[in-house]
Each structure stands twice: as structure tokens, then as C-alpha cells.
Image (tube, rainbow, N blue to C red; front, side, top):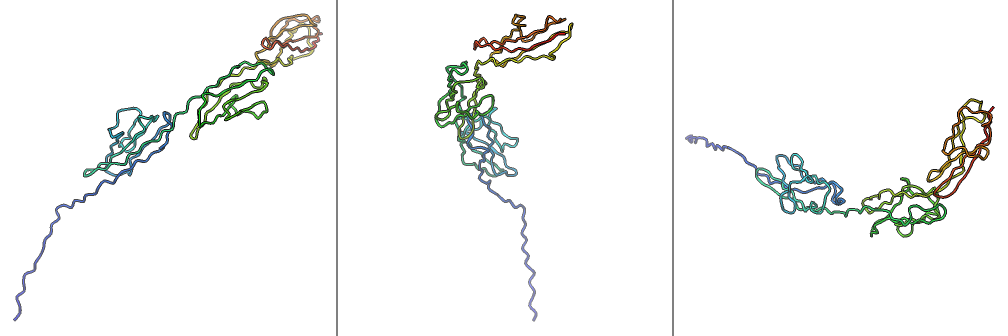
Length: 292
């Protein structure tokens, strides 16, 4: 006898919807600079990782970000730019990442501010010394701990010279027996482990000279009826005052001498005297001119 066959048993499983729930990863904050200079540097904070379909929120001191031009969010809020960080914007910061089903907040991050460097300035008892007579001491203020000092003159590093001394930590610059070569704007610069800040330039005005003047003339021999033109220059600080003579007789004052329609009577020994009213010195030079 053949057994009866049972009808097949079929199990129908219908998947109407499969919903996978993925937790939002714990975010963390990365920074372009964790040790910014107070008040001067810009810092960019990023909420990582960059996650698709996530939104971002930022907190400072446990509060929502205040409205401020110093705090700027990117278009998707993932990055936060801090301009000129101060103590009240140093943190702690937290960022929160939110998805449609969950959210997670980062650990707090606080910026370590480095103190703002004080702007230095130069003091001295004598900014107008006499050449080869005075010793000048320039001091870079304020006196501070943990800083080093650098000096410049005329925008350049100090020349190597036994007359220039920088005792201690270079805060004081001593110029022995100043000369005209020491004239110029001086600057001092304060350095720490991060950066530096310069002082405003301060002029050191050393009166000197005049040096022996030089007489300039396009010709030595002139024809009658022409114009005699002479000029004179002597290196001097302040600029020298000039006067002209011919054969010892005074002609005129001024750096240039011009005599039109000259004759043979204008032949002679022309002298130029340069005088410095600050140093009291006077130097002269001579040039013989022949008119025919």
C-alpha cells in the first residue's frame, strides 16, 4: 500500500521594514593651536570625525556659544574659528554631534594661553651726545623675567665693536665714546619661547663734523662772460653752514656760489668754509679758478 503523500508545508516570512540603529560616535575636538598667544593669534577648532548626515553644536563653559565677531562657525558648524583668543574665550569647549536617532558630546578642551608680550620701549639719559666725549646707555624697558633682548640700529643687527657692550641679558646697550657712525634709529626686541615684539625706533642724534669740505666745479678754467658755478659739501650733523671767499675776502653765504658774466678779475683762490653750530667746529677747502 502506497502511503498517502502529505501536502507540502510552506512558511512565508515577510520583511516589511528593516531598521538598523547606529549610535553616533563620540566626537573629539582638534585644534590648529592649543597654545596661542593671548590677544594676537587665531585658532581653528574642529569637531571630528566628519560624519555624514550629522549636525554639530558647540558649547563654551557649559553654555551655548555667545554671539560674537570673535567666534565664527563654518557653514555646517563643524569648525569654530576663534579670533584673538582671550581668557574669556579660552574655553573649555565641547562639541556635540547629533544624528536623527542619537547624540554624543566630546570631552572638554581648554586652550593654554601664552601671556601677551609687553611692548618694549627705550630709555636713556642722553639722546644727543657729543662725538668722542660721551658714553651713552640705552635701556630696553620693561625689565621682565624669562625674556631675552635683541638690539638693532638702522634696521640691522648691531655691528661687532669693542665700543658696544651689552651687560647682563642684553637689556642695556652701552656705547662708549660715541661717534657719528653711532647715529641712527635704535630698536630693542623682547623674545620669549614663542615669539617677539619690537619697540618703536628711537633716534640717537650724535652731532659731528664737519668733515673737510669738497668743492665741486664743472671747470677749472672759465672764459670771460660765462657763469661761474661752484658748490660745496661737508659731511656734518646737523648740516653745516657754508660761506665763500675769494683770496680771503668774503663773497656770500650758502652751499652754492653762482657769478654770472665773469671777467678776468674773478680769477683767484676760492674758499669754502663749513661750520657746525652744534659742535662749534669749522673746516675749509680751497680751489683756484682761472678766468681768461
